[in-house]
Length: 464
Ligand SMILES: *Cc1c(COP(=O)(O)O)cnc(C)c1O
Image (cartoon, rainbow, N blue to C red):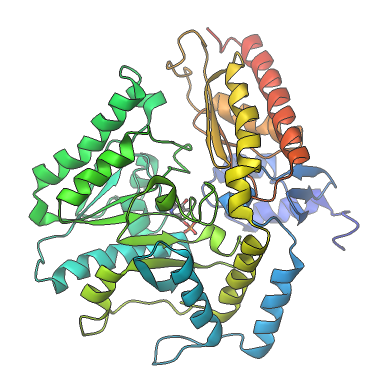
């Protein structure tokens, strides 16, 4: 079984997978009946499956593979680090060169006031860290009543207890009796789905003020923090109206609560800036990062910490009783450094802003004219298409939400491209190295996929 030959015993592997492997976020009964698709190798933006089929990775893995697959440079850096020091912890007054180098590098890349990083292994862990940091911060300020954290419905902050609680996914809350106490959710800036009886600008202001109302109702003296993604990813690439973040910023400036910008997707160039906070001109006190930090080559996350929180918590004296065995893992840090080298050397952030971003946006937004599409939206290179049953009445959803999206996703796979379905929105978030030619393939495949989906939905009576 070599990667070159691509002759894998698909059926046998699927049976073993079905027998023993429980996949994340999956209906395992139906998945096992159907059989998983087995990805065996990848290069650049292209995946290869066990049948030898090439598929364009329109989701950059899971929003993370900024520099594309198969970068030998990252593998070599990890190999070198593992031979030198494969593991040591950072708990007991110890550290190591890769963690030091990465912390310094991140402090330079992050907005000016964020100069410290707490390392962990994932975005979920980063948000668990955030949860404990913000509450402990206020304890240290002599304000132990400030404990409530405000998140947003349909926000995503990971799948651990704190991550699920801070996020606003009702289907996740139902499993495990969450959220935990002391988390409050407000409405999201989802104009297409929830705000279309107002102009986008009016809705942006309206929904931002939900934050103001929540803080004032709960009491500023009881609120610790507000957490939000600059653009919601897993919730369906929700790009807020232009008025939203400036109004949130005003509200935060007038109130004494911490602001957490979850940059797990928006960070590391996805929006054509290093961070979504820069893109929107917002000023987080804490900034969870993961995904694009290593381009997914090894698992790593972190929380970037502002000078204010560093002084008020980290340097306030006493232990912060929190950490992970793999905080700052040397091999993961080496992968992150090599990944950042590539992003900088190849100018990938500027490329998203000035080249592939505008190129893809222009073509993607045109898909909004398709009979099946109610709205096309994209910032940087992350975008969504809202599938609708009646283009003349575009805000009306399908009768069975999610079914048309899954159909469209499967058709897209068959045509050789990964698009993800969130409800009935089709999502793309490709690697930052996507070429113009590959972007053309992406658009042509999306169009073909929309046509085929439309035909089947029409035949089966889904359209109005
Ligand atoms: C993916 C994601 C997380 C969780 O990261 P994991 O590495 O899967 O734990 C948290 N926040 C956001 C915004 C994400 O997109």
